[in-house]
Picture: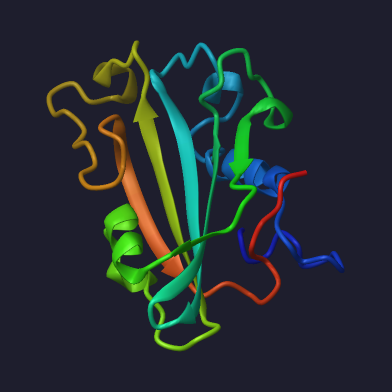
Length: 171
């Protein structure tokens, strides 16, 4: 979805609204109605994060983080979901990127190369109950590493984005 959402537009740069629509669409396979929003009757909500890097030289990268989630209380539509993109593009060293993401695949081999780390997961709410998800005996395993301690069914993927998608912008 990240690669295709802007295919029909002349301006290919992603926006925070695009990130919100991607997060909303990505959780429709599990949530079929407003159960993805507050009061979260299943005790979980969906979270999508991206980390974009562009190598400037061997010791310097441009960096941007963005996210979309159904975590906001009172939110009941994609328009009111939490969706955010860092306004400022920061500069990081390879060791800072490794510390922040714990993902060596995000480091680039050539100057000008770009990569995006995509993290998707469900997160527990304060009212989470494993039985609501059909786990009567086993407890879902929580993610380790950079994901929050409330994250489970956690998946990460590193891609090379289409030219022009990043850095994303707020709208």
